Length: 78
Image 1 (tube, rainbow, N blue to C red):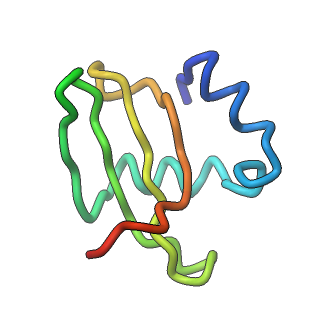
Image 2: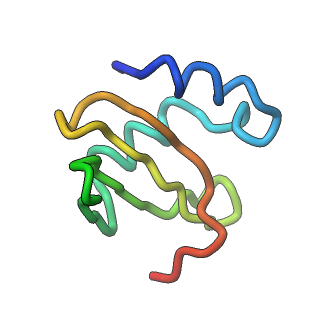
């Protein structure tokens, strides 16, 4: 999985350390929703049953491959 330095730095935070690579890949491969930001970055969401059904947001760079951010989105409504 290709990632940015920002992602590598933020992933060390306690609130992000529990996010599994498998979950990130699942969101990338099978998003339930997707949107493109004004800067070209791609936001994808998917429900993670193993984490209480919460929605994981993965932000990709405009190349559609490089992970820039991943976090459980408290404000997401399906």
